Amino acid sequence: MGKEKAKIYTVSQVNGLIKGVLESNLPGRLTVAGEISDWKEHSPSGHCYFSLKDEKSNLPCAMWKPNVLRVRFRPENGLAVLASGFIDVYVPRGRYQLIVDEFVPAGVGALQLAFEQMVKKLRAEGLFEDKHKKRLPAYPARIGILTSESGAAVRDIEDSIFNRWPCVKLFLYPVPVQGEGAAEKIAAAIRDVNRRNKKLKLDILIVGRGGGSREDLWAFNEEVLARAIFESQIPVISAVGHEVDVTIADYVADARASTPTKAGVVAVPDYVEVLEQLGSMERRIAGELRAGLDLASQRLETLLAGAIFRNPLSLVHNREQQVDEVRTVLVGSVRELLASARKLVSAGYEHIVKIEPHRLLGKMAVDVGRLGSRADAAIKSVLTRARMGITAGANRLAGLNPKAVLKRGYSITTVKGTGKVVRKREEIEIGDLMVTELAEENLIESKVTKK
Amino acid sequence: MADKKDDDISKLSFEDAIKELTAIVGKIEQGEIALQDSLEQYERGMALIKHCRGILQQAEKRIEKISKEAGDSKEE
Image 1: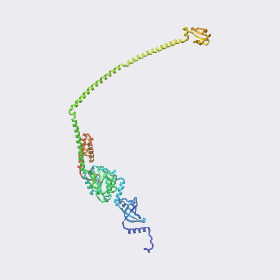
Image 2: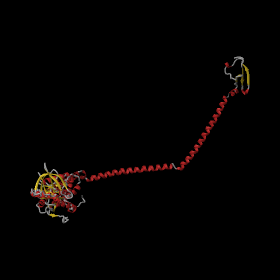
Image 3: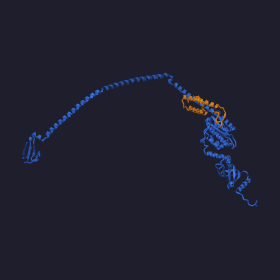
Image 4: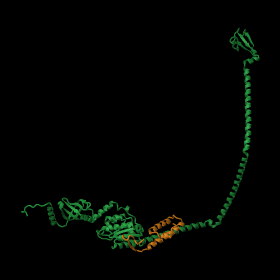
């Protein structure tokens, strides 16, 4: 080969050669340990592209949609996995890649990882919280059982219920409990009975199956079933597998029976206990009633022993006496009332007669006349008194006139010239001429000769 | 209470009957009611107990099948 002249290859030829070499020299199937990185899901194809890596190296990987859907857990970056598949060369890009068809988580198992991831997710959404748990009816009358018709679980559940509570009606809704699509079918059945429950009138639903491998129980860990249980208006009891098996359905159900054989204990009361309770209630109300009757008859006895019942007529006589007394008092006071009423009436009549209006008017006219005369007299006397006063005043005035004095023989002497009235000696001098006035206008002149 | 007749009781579910019964026992025991009423309540209580016992004895122990296709249960 070396001696031959160098051959020219096309790009396609080279990639084709590499593809052939790889495929013929590598094992047909490889399982590679690595950590997932660069996880990308392509839409709409659903194929996924990522890398597996270790400390030193990176291996491009692809996973086709059907294989992706089969992975129970969620592949995420950083997750350590064992990826199985084969090496393929993608000729258009000259790129080799591991075509992964199966993942197994390194460390924990795939199912355990998926379970843990689902618990985490649904818990974060609050689906397991106690506040969402519905209370189971204390005495259910109709119970729906969703399980496989062929399994042992249906008998176990039935027996465990009827042994405790035979008066309940059971309804089996057959569903597949494992395999492809089982979770979806159980979920659909739960929604179906909820929709029809106006007619079905189921008090409780029991969803379950007998023991099996983790894989067998897987339907009870799936999200679709968990959500259907969560949304059910009818309270749901989960009864899956053995005591040790715990499923998502157990977490989300309103109550959990550890196995189908324990479903009865969770779902129904024990009729022996209930019968005892009924007996106890019967005794209690009968006892209370008897006690009540005893008490009442005691009271009756006490009353019968009293004076009234020993001499029942005394009560009547007492009452009659009281009636008599009351009657006397009543008659007396009625009479008094009548008498005073009569008095009042006649007094009122007299009063009315006395103040007869026309007489009143006559009296008033007389009074007015009288008042008129009195006013006249008063005015006359005032006038008389005034006249008399005037006369007296005039007389007194006349008395005060100095000339009037002259008539009684007195005279007035004045100094001649000054006209001053002479009252005292000092007012005149010897030799002064004086004029003396007498009554009737007579004047006398004189001369002072001596003082 | 007095206007409820026995045929009303026969229609009660076990749950409702025992609920009422419990209430009656409570009332009678607490002496909340007059003697005349307690006689009535006693009679009703006894009728309820009888009804409950009757339900417990109606054990058919049968399991019926319901399915999506049938659309309905035969039982009503």
